[in-house]
Image (tube, rainbow, N blue to C red; front, side, top):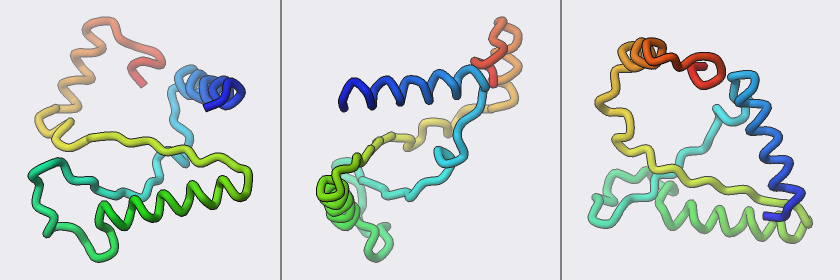
Length: 105
């Protein structure tokens, strides 16, 4: 990513942090599961396999390249990340430990 794009992205992150809000578009996503090694592939929906998503992504990158625009991709592994977290208890603990403001929001 170029320096200009990095600075713009940093500005967006800093504004989000300052206001304690996420841009609405960040709350919208097309979810494409990419199974870890050894996971059952049978649970994939039709036309939603890893191969289909990879092909789609490659086409989006090619389209952006031809249009001289940018394609941003983020991968996040959230599998079982919050399975055992009690949000209400976590929020109380954060407050008790002095976490507030943007960090708490």
